[in-house]
Image (cartoon, rainbow, N blue to C red; front, side, top):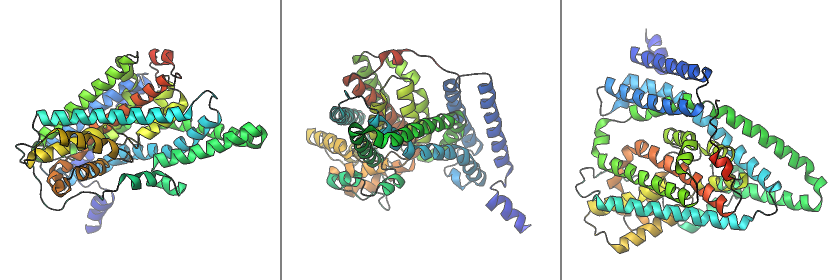
Length: 466
């Protein structure tokens, strides 16, 4: 009897009727998604529907548990979320599998085939200016939203216990660590900027030899071109699984959060999402200023934004982001690869802009520290500069928070945000969605300035059935 118990509970992770029930429900929903695909319902519509279904499934699990404050202590929820992670997080693992080869091969391929008129220095300068400028704007929005609603003034969520602050590094150390002293380590650490730098050196060297004697590198250039085609095809194959992955990803995020932990920091959650919506509007305004329809943009951006929202990984969304920019939005391949890759690591408007700024205002109000022009300017500068080198994977917003909170002198108060960190996955969904949208709008704006943007491709909304 004991062996059977161990087999079902410890090994198979199906020891309750609830686990079996919710697994059957998930497989039924997978079949429903497959049925819609056979009926040639577009991938975008299926992904949107999957988002709603995933949200409802997570809520149903919460309702069934009686909105338990510690849902992960319930055996069937622990088992359900473990099984759901196989399909949801398994998809993210497949996406991450593509990041290194896609970025490395795409950058090299772009450089060896780049148009002689492309100004790489100008592209780099514009990328830095646009990316950091948009982070500064997001930080300003986060500051004013928090200050207007007096976030933290009547806080009952002040934490205690061990501080979860991460080691804070100075900006020089951060910048040095982006230089790939060990390219293999840069790949294992998902140091995207380091990979971009390494790929650029290979591409520039190959381009130099190509200009001197094309035959010497012809086989290498052909190999990279073939590899790029293969990697691009694998990307499309994996992306087709998106509607199936969204359901368990979102259901898990909702099911794992206790109601009490959400209620304690409800104002912070609401204000963060309000600031995110305002920043989305700012992005839309910038697109309109550049003569582009925000409606068309958001329609075409829906799939990467949904993946970002459910996966909570800016870097994990990168293959789909680049694919959408180049195939559907008319962004030049070199611009999309460079700007989107940069934006998945540095200058994230949600994780490294709005979020740390709101934490600073929260701590100031909660501790009776005056909010004045000095704190405002210091926050914007620290947050904007601190946004460099923040890796685009789930959970790294705490690194941005550590840098920013310490940068304005609030390091000793960091343990007070522990209750906010407890609901970080709920906050991270919106933040990551904004990060990815920021990378896409940054790419479009940079490409417009470089005059390599294809407006006709952007405006031609031809939704394909996949």
